[in-house]
Image (tube, one colour):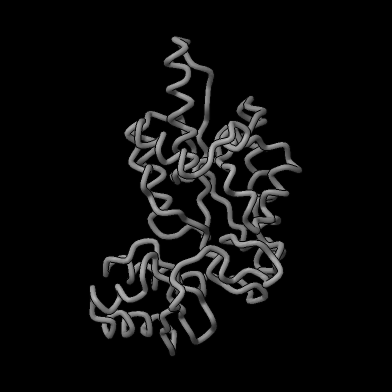
Length: 259
């Protein structure tokens, strides 16, 4: 069973599975079930994208509804939130795997990921989930290059992360604040800034752009963006001069990372 998100890594794993057995001329190939988690922590459009992509790749896939906000250890949004979230999600996947006769679960961690502050990796290790890309020694740049060679549409897809990474630790997660950042990021995408992050600081929306922050002034009417974001419930809209960087909300004594 593959934990499939439609991102660069899990999409490459899905395609590589089929490609490997095709080269080995094994018919039929051993079964791989791609499981897509339907969660309120997903950025808008990601579920539909993963569903469409799995279908286009001819994958055997299933959507599994899972609401981590129902788990107090996740909703409280402490520094170990990602650990509890991953543990709950992969425990759910293991239960489905037992029902389907699929005892092995794989996911898309690569060799770049362990350098980040990602408590979820501890949950993955504790549950015995396999990470073939990391085991093969592949980093993100190599996976993108190999994905391009396989003509995968995700080869240059911006890196993603769950919406909880936009909310400072200690501020409880809710459908309201997650919805605010999702809608604010959709505003930026519509103005030509895909991959931007909107960090939620109460009344303040802090925008981190991918690329030079000055592009915001050259490419669009910042007044329109500010007005649209304020309509979502923010009082102030700010532009972070350092731009997008993973882990800008991490505790100060941790390594970088988007969690």
